Image 1 (cartoon, rainbow, N blue to C red):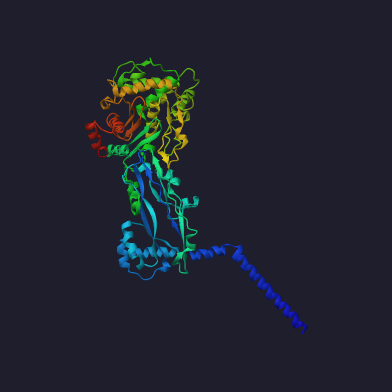
Image 2 (cartoon, rainbow, N blue to C red):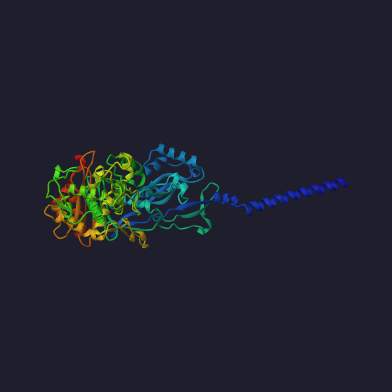
Length: 603
């Protein structure tokens, strides 16, 4: 009997121990370890993302450039689908029956119980019809988001476009999930964090079949989507549209800057495209077509094309020579026109010629002698020291560097280093004659149209520039304080007035290369340029600013494969200045010629 009594205690102890283990385990599962709770909640709740509207984009005069239109993604939960009228369904969505089978197979592979996208970005018209009949199609529901819309199709390369995120971005930034959208280029990319807003979420209770049964906790834990921040750009929409019309059927760019602020008034790149082409379900096909277009409409020439500056660079070499005290206002050099050596001049003119006349006449001989005097200045111990002094002055104008700005995919251009010539010719085995093409803005020098416009603004300001930028205001928070800082060149301001007067003679002088396009009421300053092009006709280049005193606009125009600067670039710049400063075009004959000019067919 004793033996049975002992067994009773052992069995009781085992039962008690097992019971304690179960209690502890249940306590651990329900109270300590939250993963089971989370799993249960996930099975009973559906989190539906509320996508925010992206911030609106305005021009400098508060004209709306980009806004949002509602778009709708048709979602599907395969487990909830019952037999439905596929003919009516396909008619509403304008898709073949086979497409339904394909999309449902994809959805089932993803999950039988979780929602996935059946069709992206159905139109508002389709949504209106579908919404009335959605009850006939169990398992389908619509999730709302927004798409960009451009009321006036301009400035596509400035504004950029929005596209679906890739796996790299979702891994890098936890804000994004598969199927989200982000800025891919332009302002949309640069100011993505400001424009995207903040997502919200609505939580629903669902049953074991993932069917919605109501709001979770009466919406206590729901969050509201916060719209993105509105942005005001520096762009003048009217001037931008006019510039794009002038550049139609031409290859090149126009960049206009307000010298007193560095604000970019216009950034035209041509050919361009309608930004609405890269919105919605047609985006993928249109992007393929644009990418394969031989004229490269997606390429932002204003920031990414690099050219020899040609004669527009002569002012820089003249200013450097003045600063290095190897050139005086009374210095004159002889020129034999096309017979000149080692660099021939483009035409015959008065000789000898001084600094003032060399700008008006665009004399190559003068600037070869000037450049030679800089590099071979007696105070320099070597050609390398002279070259580095020249190079440092040139870079102070913003050449050879990217601007620390809000510009997307800007290239730096090229101001060569002595090492390049050491590699080609050997150390200390080259001299000014070897690199003489640099004296007239050719050779290894490469600049972007933006840098040329900034050169014009720098001379207009008599020796300094503000960093060129595209954003004027971010929801009343103002602009980056770095954009308010003056960037001084290494050239003393006392040297600039002479250069300004000489550029004035390009329009006003008897022999000025732009005299045919001067404005009667507005004194203008400019400089023509012709960039050599080994692949065809030379590029037509022109920089200008106006008015001469207290300038409001500085501009660069590049028209590729079009010959001399006076043929196309000068009249386009003159029309842009007239449009901006007066609002009325009196050069009607010139305007008609520019608007109707077709250089793409010509080339």
